[in-house]
Length: 83
Image (cartoon, rainbow, N blue to C red; front, side, top):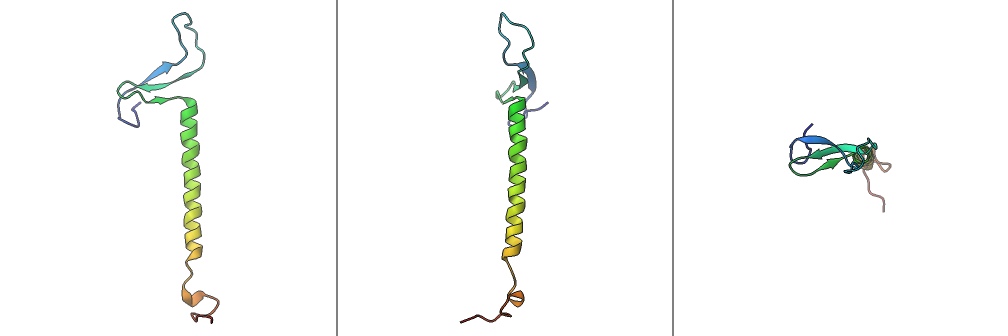
């Protein structure tokens, strides 16, 4: 696996392993050996979630722009300005 930031090598790590405790405690992730970028399941989930939210917001903005721009020939006044 390659790092998103520097494209370096990512290595699997167990974050809570201490010198006295070699058991698998379930907090594992990836760490870049070049820049130190850390990815764990929570970070990965939050990146996916925020990416999906941004996509939804962009769709809403583009739909709003589409409905906001109505040509004058289609307006209620037939292109005439009301005084």
